[in-house]
Length: 114
Length: 116
Image 1 (cartoon, helix red, strand yellow):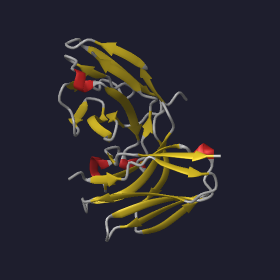
Image 2 (cartoon, rainbow over the protein chains, first blue to last red):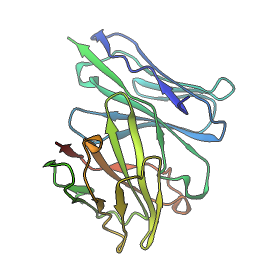
Image 3 (cartoon, rainbow over the protein chains, first blue to last red):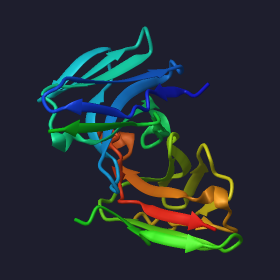
Image 4 (cartoon, each protein chain N blue to C red):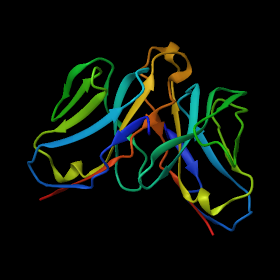
């Protein structure tokens, strides 16, 4: 069983739709939860970062963490064609040399069509 | 600031050939790492360095060597290329946890390698 499972999609939605992206994980040691966005033929870029259960909002994006269920989500409201990309969840342990050693989900390819 | 620079962007090798993927960062980051990205697999950690002279293995280290002689550079060497090493390779860097940063990884644009 992989440590992090992400629904690979692909996901195709109309402009303005609400998008839900999800990951489940098995390792309780994961304490930091991130979402990276990767445009075609580019490197991933950090989109959202959380370290506690609950919700974190940034504009049209909301990251949700449920540590008890080992489940993380990313919601995109009013999706735009510019949101079309691959979205990767990434998790890491707390402290030590865990910084920079991320465990990634498989990535979900999202297409938002006008 | 150029950020993380990877060269070459594209490379085709024959089985058994060797090559080095170059990675340089100008952000004075302590940590540097190499990931490979394959369809349906996400990014998997190959090798990792917490500073000059210090390297460690990641999840998929076999067939790859690294060294870190300076803070800025972290080359990845393929000793004898195999078709299973066909992939997109990403170099990344970050501050250490002692810097008070969030540990965000900064990625290069990738090196696309095909082994025939």
